[in-house]
Amino acid sequence: MGKLVVAVHGIGDHTPDFAAEWEEVLRRNHPHGDFQVAGLWWHDVLQKVAEKYPIVEQQFAAALDQFGFPELQKVLDSAGYAMVRELLMDVLVYIAMGDMTHYIQTEVALRLQRLIHEAGSQAEETLLIGHSLGAAVLPHVVWDERNHIGYIPYGGMLLLASPLGMESPIPDVIQDLLGWMAGDSGMDRKAMLAAFAREWNEGALRFFNNTRDIVCCDARFAIGGVDKDLIPLRQGFNVEEIAVLNRENPGSVVRFAQGTADPRDVVNNHAVTLYLERPELQRAFAAMLGETP
Amino acid sequence: MRSRLLRLAARPAVSLVLALVVLAPLAGSAGELPDAAEIRAYVVAVTELAGEIADPPGADQSIKAYLDGCAARAADLLALATTTPPDPTALLAGLRRVVDQRNRAKDALVDLTDLGRHLLREENRQQWPALGAYLRGDYLEYLVVKRELLERKYFEEDDPAEANLLEGWINGRVGFLQYRERSEAWYRAHGVSAWEVTVRTEPVVLLAGSNDAGVLFAGGLLYNFFPEVAQRPDDPYTADVTDGFLSKQVKRVGLRAGAGAVFDGEGPDLLLGLGLQVRAISLWATYQPEDTQWSLAFGISEWDWVKKLRPFLPYFGR
Image 1 (cartoon, rainbow over the protein chains, first blue to last red):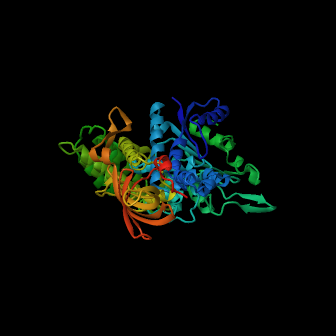
Image 2 (image 1 turned 90 degrees about the vertical axis):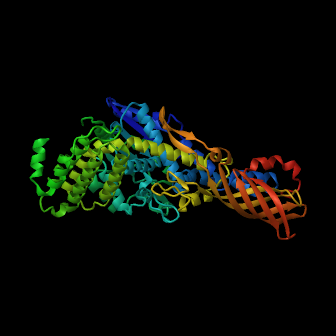
């Protein structure tokens, strides 16, 4: 029996069959690979939490509108608020409210367990591929499992555009994603990354980071003839952290540059298909499948 | 196996652990827990890995100490696996304890040499899974129970869509409110705190003195009554929930305090209130400083109902 490949999407709108697109790319590039793809859909969980915890209560605004105070509802109906909500809420609900991080993580972990069971597979024969926020949730899920059973049982993990390196400027208010993994262990970022990388066999952990992608790298964009970092916080691993990952698990950080430094390409530079088509990913995936070069 | 044991026993540093292992009687299987033979095989393999390190260990001191610690803890586990009569509960507790101690020891490893990393992978990926895999069922149970209790606390309310980001942040950050896996307290069920803070705006209708309507911005400290939660025997991925009277009928109770405005025919007046909440319904003792008037008020932290009363509340919002 071949490998089970579990795909985990990121933020944005995704339907339950989202993994079909991923599978098409993987099959095209690995026509002889013995694997099946299962999508771990968790968009509904993010939506459920986002709906319960809006920035402002929608019902409150609607009631005020009905009783003669329309101002708040106008703000909530505005395009600006919709944009803020679309861009930020999925991320905020995952990282800003500790119990909701637990809730989402637990739901994803349960769905992963069930997917493997229903596929008739084993964790050891399962490869995990996460994109964007899904590539931060996956490390959280497997680390929690490791804390319970003492090891990470999965065959391999490919993390595309993972925001795991993002550093919170206000960790006392919003913990960063690595800090969440470390929990009460007292490990700093580098110690956490070292411990995580060591848990995997060599070649079984790969971060793929497009240096033009603002989600996983401090990408600079040409604005008015000047190179600018659009986000005023550190998104990617720094040089020392990359060195730690590569020391503990050689080749675990793969960086490349694809796309333009045009701000209009921010979304394109983050696209999952861009990552899935990369030759570096195809080589790593082939190795995890056990295909001969 | 015998020749490996003899070869390893020649090393003074490992002879004590091996002596304990070899002398331990063979025991039968403890069901879904590792048996003595599996634990013994782990001890032997790990001791053999430690034996690959030169003496003195030099730069490999930390991995040597780690492997020796793994062998010693497993030897203790072996003793639990060979008690008569068998005690699965103690063995499971012992296995969990070994995982915690071993994880802490692994996380503390720094500056490993290439040999150290190799030995760690051998122990972690090749040897430990034979024992750690027995905790997978335990892990699944933890997921099912935790998910169900968090679902109960945060989503199975009468007014689930009425929260906001601030409320979520507080409940996830304050120690006695947030989930804490290792914390045991009378108000926690499997790490989930029964306490919850609410920070919400709420419509109220005064019941005495006048029938004016108002809005309170209120904070509350509520206590959730949890059901008993376990795995379903026929589907271990879902929860088997057993409700008692309090968890089914009352669900949550608490005290609230708020300030806002009451809308009478002459415009909004300041309104202060102290409330008792059961489920989504609150009974308020309200005070209007302008009129030095106390009143009772009724509120539901759900805005849909008050919209239906709009025709009967002519002054609201004018």
